[in-house]
Length: 314
Image 1 (cartoon, rainbow, N blue to C red):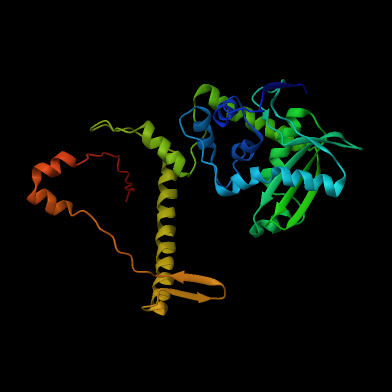
Image 2 (image 1 turned 60 degrees about the horizontal axis):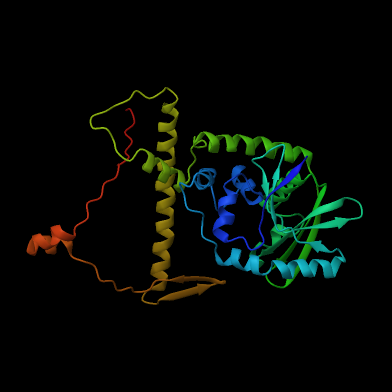
């Protein structure tokens, strides 16, 4: 599989790097496309690629992951004797141009030759995810990179909780790569056509639908397809489950409040619950409207939204 260089990332401004990422699907996008990412949904990614959704801001964990990358790389070389060469380029598959790769580095293995190197950091709370394997999202990421480069293996090194270091050698998985290519090609088709991927239960999808169909046509109606009857059933069943779970949650909350009494904080077995008094100042809009109607009208903001209701057949 041939690979070409899209651009050098040396001294490349972050904003420009983000623009290049919109040219295709990167390694960190692979788990999103496959629907297993905990922090981003396919429709969010689709909106990002089309400039309809701002990229998620980099959090503290991502920031420190970037800052500690060189340390992880140096420790890997120290423990294994394997040198890592930086790859300051965005790479693109010639066979599948929608597949991009921004590698942490490349190293050489006596058996496999050139290999991917990927550096990670992880919270101590996720240590169990690294016990016998690596997290699924990172497996997809390095297999994506191997698909782009044609390499036969990848090393992934991780610093866990700031005091535990591990690394693993992962072989190329042709079956997994074939699945990745199929799913990523399908997803990229949605991007090229401007057609959203199938709707899901995410807030991002709800936001997209609310913006796309922001205004209802007065007195309009449509005959829904017969398969919509199942959606009514699914909706009502979910509401029943939600009511039950909400009541169970409220029961547990009420009992905890009873145990706290007038105390602000309670602890048991490492668990902490707080019930603190909070003071807030709120504008009394009702009184303002009554006593100062002109002032109220001047500063009042009119908002509109579409209210969703479901009424099932008896």
